[in-house]
Amino acid sequence: MSRSAIPAGTASGTRDYAIVTAAYWGFTLTDGALRMLVLLHFFRLGYSPFALAFLFLLYEAAGIGANLIGGWLATRFGIARMLAVGLTAQICGFLMLSALSPGWGAALSVAWVVAAQGACGVAKDLTKTASKSAIKLIHDGAYGVAAEARLRASPTGDRTPAEASGRLFRWVAFFTGSKNAMKGLGFFLGGVLLEALGFRGALWAMAAVLGCILAGVVLSLPPLMGKARASRSVKEFFARSRGINLLAAARVVLFGARDVWFVVGLPVFLYASGWSFPMVGGFLALWTIGYGVVQAAAPALVRRSADGLSTEVQAARLWSLLLALVPAALAAALLAEVARPDLVVVAGLAVFGFAFAVDSSVHSYLVLAYAGSAKAAEDVGFYYAANAAGRFAGILLSGLLYGWGGLPACLLGSAAMLAACWVFTLSLPLRADAGAPVAAAG
Image 1 (tube, helix red, strand yellow):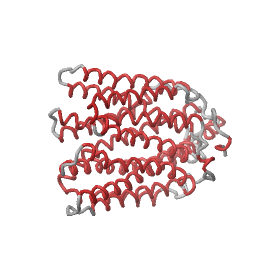
Image 2 (cartoon, one colour):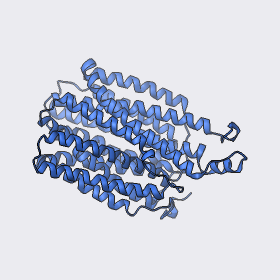
Image 3 (cartoon, helix red, strand yellow):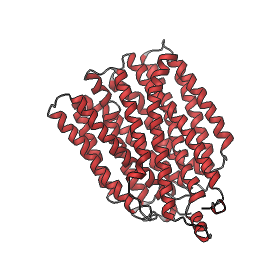
């Protein structure tokens, strides 16, 4: 295709996509490092597994409200502004954590850390909602259906709406996969920074890096990008399409099914099996990086459809069903008291990670396929509020179920949640506007 056939805004769209992705990489790298910093620091202070889970509960709970209100705010004031607010909130959370004093009592220390983690949870989900909404907006502005129609009308135009949906899938998959790879690197970085700079020094260093990223975002992106008419009532705000609502329900149980055994149950199980903490942390980092790589490659593993939904929805159903079988099989193996259960779990987790990466990548694409461009930030925020609710439930259940029945109980809980996820996907519509309420139009 000749350069003259490239629609206006394509070059700037690719540039904005690169800026948003790079900013979110930097954010995610420090966010992953923060999780490992807190986990390692307070583990060394003698905190129990359930107490460690409690430190992260407000971090996840805050994300529910942050996603809901963040999507509305991004629509009302612009996506770039909300991205800047998210980065600023993370810097404030880091500085708040760095003010923690060793002389404080246990109750005050826990309350302070939980509050700071809450600020970081708000930051993470404001940043995620703004970033993923920006991808939808940038893509539709440069490569959307209207742009494709202009290309087909030109003598050299040869693109189709199917190619546009394929590009959106690739953009989302690369963004999500690379983000999770950065999170895995962040786990490793957190351990290194804690060893080299100490708890407070590591937080200061990460706050400085985020300050540079914040300056780049403010100077590079148009502040009103994505600004549109936001919902004016609670009824209109929650008037989502059927596809968005079903995906949100599936997202709750999908991510709950991961965290119910990944966050607390798995690290404690491996440590109890004789693994050192560096071995546990290193494995979690490698798993997360591998998970991100598979997510980025997901478009090559899922057959594409001309309408951008029919085969993709079928893929979501298939991968959810296959995924549910993995923790069920692992629970059965542990209950049968197989030899070297730690190695069995590690091997099973590798299979789980592969299937989960593909399934979650398909879900991340589908929410943007169902979302309308005008208020994409609200749709994405609603969806990722469900994601935060699932993580919250998973973390809480991880501590409770492990205390009740060990890792097999966590795995059975995961299998039950994934079965529910599969049931929700069975009702996903095959058209983006199927079941869309009148209030959501415009």
